[in-house]
Amino acid sequence: MTSSARGTIFLESARVVSQQAHDAQQFVLRVAAPRCAAHAEPGSFAHVTCDAAIPMRRPLSIMRADARGGWIEMLYKTLGPGLHALARRKVGEELSVLGPIGRPFVPHPERPRTLLLGGGVGIPPMVFLAERLRRHESVIFVAIADDVTLGFTQLYPSFSSVSVRRLWILNDLFVSPAARRGGVGRRLLERAREWAVETEAKGLTLTTAVTNSAARSLYESCGWRRDDEFAHYQLLV
Ligand SMILES: Cc1cc2nc3c(=O)[nH]c(=O)nc-3n(C[C@H](O)[C@H](O)[C@H](O)COP(=O)(O)OP(=O)(O)OC[C@H]3O[C@@H](n4cnc5c(N)ncnc54)[C@H](O)[C@@H]3O)c2cc1C
Image: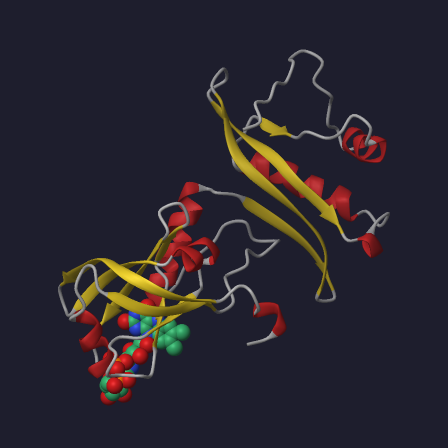
C-alpha cells in the first residue's frame, strides 16, 4: 500500500444485502460496506473473500456505490471456485471486503465529452462512470503543463426554473501557489464559459467573499458581473 493510499482503503465485514442471478452465470451482488462506499469512485475495485475456505481474495470492480446507503454493488460472472463460492453466498451473510482499490478515472481536461469503451469484466466500472456522468454530478477541468497539475475548476449543475435552462455553479477554482499570476485561473474560467456554451446553458454563477478583491477583479476581468438585482440567501444546517 503506498503512502497516498493510507486511510483510503478499508477492511470491512460486509453483509450481503442482495444477490441477483442473471443469464449466463452472471450475478449482481450488493453488500453493506459503508466506508468503501463512501470512498469508491468509477474505476475502483474491491478484494472480496468469497468463502472462508478460500483464503485468497478475488478482485471485483465496483459497479455502483451509494455513500448514503452505505453499500457497493459488483457484477461478476462465475468462472472458477472463487466466484462459484461467492454465488452461493446468501442475503445476511458476511463477506470480508477490502477496498476501494485502484486509480479512478480522471476526466480529460480538454475532452469534456466522454466515450466509454469496455468489454467483459471491464464493463462494471463503465456502468459506474456512465451513471455518474448521466447524473452530471460535477464537471472538473484541470490545467496541466508538462505533466504538472497547475489548477482545476469544478462545476455543479443547476437549473433556472424562470428561464427553464441549465445553469452551472462554479464551485471551486484553485490554482497552485507556484502557478499563480500565470493566467491559469483565467484559462480555467474561460474553459468553464466554453463548457456553458457547449451545454447550451444560460450561464454560470459563483459566490466569493466580498473581501476577496483579487478573485473579484479576476472574475470581473473575465466578463463576470456582480448580481445587484437579486439578494442571495442561505440556510446553513
Ligand atoms: C482489477 C480486476 C477487476 C475485476 N473485476 C471483475 C468484475 O467486475 N467482474 C468479474 O466477473 N470479474 C472481474 N475480475 C476478474 C475476476 O477477479 C476473476 O475472474 C476471478 O478472480 C476468478 O476467480 P475464480 O476463483 O472464480 O476463478 P479461478 O480459479 O481464478 O479461475 C478459473 C478458471 O477461469 C479462468 N479465468 C479466471 N479469470 C478469468 C477471466 N477474467 N477471463 C477468462 N478466464 C478466466 C482461469 O484461467 C481458470 O481456468 C476482475 C479482475 C481484476 C484483476
